Image 1 (cartoon, helix red, strand yellow):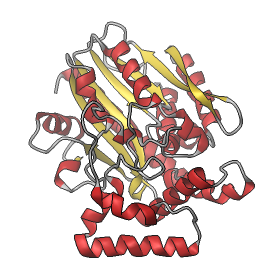
Image 2 (cartoon, rainbow, N blue to C red):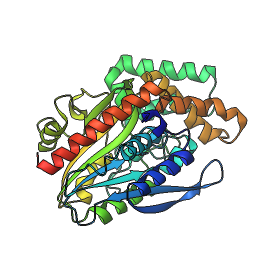
Image 3 (tube, helix red, strand yellow):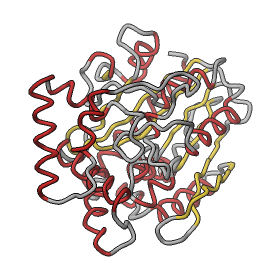
Image 4 (cartoon, rainbow, N blue to C red):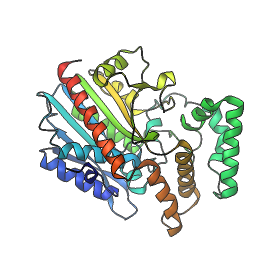
Length: 362
């Protein structure tokens, strides 16, 4: 089989492939309809495929589309696993739960965020407590998301970021810009002021299917950080934690932790992997973000800024929006056979390692 054929050109095609392959593999399928519609006017859905999950104490969860447009990667990896027959080869007593397009709006509209402009991996916080503050982002916001996005605005944005980095350091600049913020609803990496639709949906899925599980592995597919096609395996806990040591027994020594500054990702608050233990208090959770590189960070941020401007101040349905949408699609989807093959191969290995870890109690 050609792994590249498992990937799709758009959300609608990806959903069709996933549902067809999941049904052929014997899945118990569930569909959750999103309140909004896609750019084609069609309905949007999060789809769930469960394989041997009912009554299973050990379950591997595979999540695509946390960051919308990054769903091309996760969907392709899920379909590839289904087409390879990995479901039938899973260890006895271990279930597999696939969540396809948990943020279908972002997938369909080619946005990293939800329809509320929320970054889902900044949204898993306790909103009954004071919201986290990010004074660095407050300083940068007027330059990051200006009301006009032209060459002068791009130059001013770059100059503001460079000045902040010179004054505070490059790492502090990346943390200020990408770590998450809760003050600017029209801005980048916005965490929201309440749980988003996607967070509520994912919470309901996990608690419904995994209430009786005692050991749960989670692989959450992402793109946009790191070298072309290389999948960094990111753990959100520190290297001296039980969770990191357990993940290292599953996946090997190449794991990265956001807690020690060695990952391509900055440390963030409000990610779904960190929130999973509270949702499943009776289960031992081993979560990993599967982060596949595409293009340099400057390219990624420029695409995000243009898309942010488009939805806050422009018209995403106009013909003039196409170059912006093409750029953000390219930023998070390596639409080339070598990239797709690298995703599929690394995903296959990671899934087999996780299933072994679950079945053997590593």
